Amino acid sequence: MSRTSASSRPAFAARGQNDGRSHNGGHRHEGGRRPPGDGSDSATSHTAARRSAATPRREQAESGQHLRTAHLYRGTPSNLARLARALHRGELVAVPTETVYGLAANALDARACRRIFQAKGRPASDPLIVHLLHAADLPRIAESNDAALRLARKFWPGPLTLVLPKKSIVPDVVSAGRPSVAVRVPSHPLFRRLLKASGLPLAAPSANAFGYVSPTTAEHVLAGLGDRIGHILDGGASSIGLESTIVDLRDPRKPRLLRPGAITRRELERALGRRVPSAAATKRPARGAQLAPGLLHRHYSPRTPVELHARINFSAIAKIDPRAREAWLFLARPKQLKAGANAHVSANIHWLDPRGHLHGAAHQLFGKLRALDAGGWKNIHVEPVPGAGLADAINDRLRRAAAR
Ligand code: TXA
Ligand code: MG
Image (cartoon, rainbow, N blue to C red; front, side, top):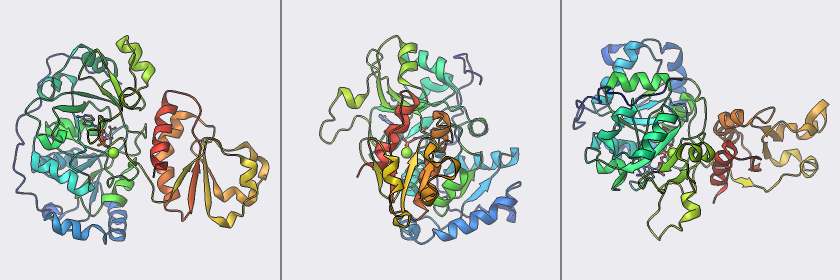
């Protein structure tokens, strides 16, 4: 993976500040043809979107948007050019990233960004992350500092988001009215090609309906938002599978971890040469003023109740009636299932990674939660995964999924 140097690359183009009036969804079958390269996907697209069409119809009518069926686009040059034009028109494009799929809009276009909140059903108080092609573009968006530059040099492009004082070019809707903005330079090659083709900074939260499990494939996005958005760029499964690590660097001498992710606390502390405590551990949020908005309440939750146990006792599971529709999700394939043992409950037992490797588990977590959610289970039982680093990030998501 190439690292972005702070050399004098051109900052993103200033074009694209439009008022979004052209946004009417009517372009989707532009030229009467399907986008090249997406033929095999469009059948999936229609089925999935029809299935979930009922709920958002009223919301769409309220937001003045037409009912639409999302198209899946492969990353061909002509598709990327087409999606870049859509972004310039103020439309939303779901994009693949190495963490999770994002729902992107031109970060400098307030109306386009407002559509993100409408499509997700996201409260306006929950700010968005701005994605840049190069670290060299950072000064146009945010007030940088030594600590930020050090982390940017070490971890960008990659799964790290920095919270910094915001520059006035960033509309208030993006930062939810805060004087700070969250920024990251993603490493996903296809997303980078779209950032380059558009020449825009792209604001993007995870591409899920608010509060639901983040999407790690284009199909997840289609299932959740397929009838609320027009375009999904299909870049395959997100390699990491968990949202980025977020660090508050507004004060470079007091870095705070706002959200654990694949860049671990230890890596941040080594790079900065100082401790990086969790914001939640250092500050009790004042009433009505969350330090990490959107992170303190129930989040990433399947509809099926998730029970987080300190530890799951396998022998207790083996005694249950398998028809009770209780599902257990382990880190690794339980050894009690070896050689055909406990076959009567094997349908109830699931795991994140056959051998319990943390990277595999992170990669699978959201997909497994979604699959179990669709499986008609009464409860999903989980236990924390052992270890630190990536384990902290996985456990953070398990805790949130289980929060009521
Ligand atoms: O990996 C990721 O970060 C993905 C991909 C798409 O880049 N994005 C993502 O965005 O997870 P989202 O919106 O689901 O989470 C962003 C969180 C917000 O909920 C908020 O907690 C935090 O970032 N955030 C954004 N701006 C902030 C700010 N100015 N101050 C503090 N926290 C902020
Ligand atoms: Mg999210």
